[in-house]
Amino acid sequence: MSRLHIVGGNKISGEVKIQGAKNSVLPILAATLLIKGKCVLRNCPKLSDVESAVEILRYMGCTVTFEDDVIIVDSQGAKNYDIPDILMRKMRSSIMFLGPVMGRFQKARLCFPGGCELGPRPIDIHINAFREMGIKVIERHGCINCNTTEKTSSREITLPFPSVGATENIMMFACTLKGKTVIENAAKEPEIEDLQNFLNKMGAKIHGAGSGHIVIYGGRELFGAEYKIMPDRIVASTYMSAAAITGGELYLKDVVPSHLSAVLSIFEKAGCHIKKGRDYIYFKAPEKLKNVKTIMTMPYPGFPTDSNPVIAASLIKAKGTSVIIETIFQNRFKYTSELSRLGANIKIDSRVCVIEGVEKLYGAKVEATDLRGGAALVVAALGAEGETYIDNVFYIDRGYENIEKVLKSLGGQIERI
Ligand code: EPU
Image (tube, rainbow, N blue to C red; front, top):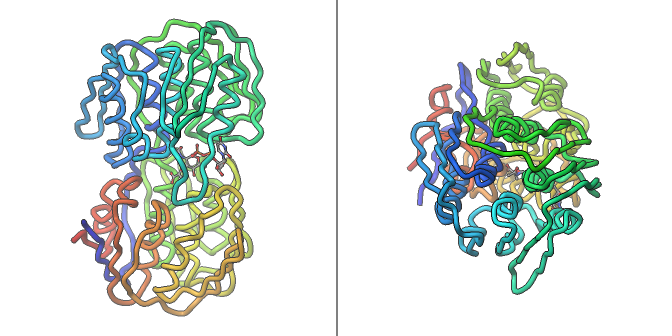
């Protein structure tokens, strides 16, 4: 089992190219099941979650190659419509295979993905939407059995909450039903727009992604496509956090600045200087950050829950008190007890996190508690005096490609041992 060894104190500065987005490539990989043919996906990050999705596709009978940043999926031979428990448990987001599997086979058998480190992860919004689309869903013995004979749909589905995964699942299944499906209160995250663009490249007719009102004209013939995955906005916010806590200066290449508006405005409040171009961000942190009075996580275009931990880590040494309110996940703040081992002064009351800025942080032995919580420990360790050892690095590898290599190239003293 590997761990990260970090010696803090160096400024994180330089030029960094941002990897492709995990939360974009995962649904897009699932969507390749909608056709019988070949898709070529570029800018795919090498992550364990991506490997898990590839494993599922191979289990289903697809031929998949993954070289450099290119994944080629040939779904001609897909024949299995079930996903075994062991594969479902590797990645909670495996639920997003439900829509494409139903679209391809009109039946599906998936084990329940269960909860995760962030708290309970129900899938009621997905299931209710599928029922509204004519799918018969039976939940038994921890598994979901679905089938449908419905070939036509002209439906309006109003989501009770703009769930990212449910919006994606509905979009993918609706492509295979004749007629018009409208999703109201759809999630507006940029990853949904990326999925729309990919599906449209495959011959689908979808518009409205990025707004709360998405329209899918289904039943069109779909074919193989080539597509470039968009940049990962959460990874960009992580490297900016690392520069922010160390007083560094970054030039981020291959980013979409508009995807990061809510995050950039928080960094500006903390005293960072930011310049944006079409696909780059110049970021300069002051020697010491100012506190940010309140940050509240919200569905996009609000402040992303996945950036909560890394921003919290960057504010530990800020002047004064910062407050973060988490509205999306119940257990988002687990990582804060590990940050306290480094000397952070953080108090949690249910969904509210109060950070009293401290003068210094000191290296310690800590454990990643989840993906973004693990990234927060890396950020804090870079801003701490002395040595930090981070265990459970496998969480971090779910979402960050070569985190130690990237940070080393930016001046960080970090290695995997
Ligand atoms: N929810 C329900 N019922 C449902 C679905 C969701 O109650 O049927 C609740 C969830 O429990 C959660 C909230 O709604 O409290 C948001 O869930 P959503 O469905 O929007 O999230 P997701 O699709 O499961 C994606 C990302 C997450 C990211 C969230 C929110 C992927 C693969 N995952 O999850 O990413 O935090 O949207 O933006 O796209 C990460 O990358 O670290 C990560 C956790």
